[in-house]
Image (cartoon, rainbow, N blue to C red):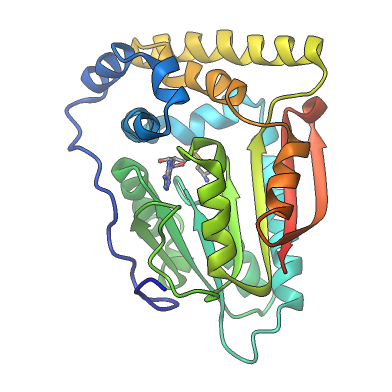
Length: 287
Ligand SMILES: C[S@@+](CC[C@H](N)C(=O)[O-])C[C@H]1O[C@@H](n2cnc3c(N)ncnc32)[C@H](O)[C@@H]1O
């Protein structure tokens, strides 16, 4: 069992290097062998974390633009599913605890807590992210436009595969575009299983390898070209957004991800697919 209790701040588990200026960092990333980093779990995080530090200030704009607004809809669906879960959660009078793994700027944590409070449900969220700049962006939201939920959302710098919360402390884990970025996705899933109480629910939203080969090539081709273009335009470094297509190619299909969940003490309740299996939301209950 790891240290930390529900609702306490999490200890920082992995620090990002201090930012040296977005363009300088983007150029340093471009010099790395991305294929070698993605293929090697021991090196992947050394690419992923600085990359998210670089893109953090424009991450929200990018996801809206890149997905033609669909990302906001998928996240709304994830939040709706999360709120349904909280409505039926047996929390025995205590506040429900939500973990938003790899929370980025905090869309899911903030949306869920706000939705819960509007529905009269007592809930608090902990968001954990490895990139210091993402943590900073999420906290800035809580000091600004999302201050209404700031007392109930705690954003921490850390690793989703080693979260400083007790076994079974969490009622709901959300993981938006998260697991694909972990050096070893199975370790992230195992950690979610450890953290959730039996009957607790995991909601993941992510990109997957489409199974139908012609569509897969078209889909990944679009993401690669569009990502490289935006990466070059905004950061003079195609690889910072071209990473998405490359990381999906190294990831699994939505069906294989469901099987991974089943093999880690989860019962998969729902798999919703969009874009021909290129994007999916899995809702799974901890057995
Ligand atoms: C594509 S963003 C998703 C952010 C947010 N969940 C959302 O849905 O918008 C992926 C996030 O995963 C974070 N990340 C990558 N590896 C991580 C790890 N091992 N532990 C925690 N966060 C990680 C990155 O820093 C980044 O913020």
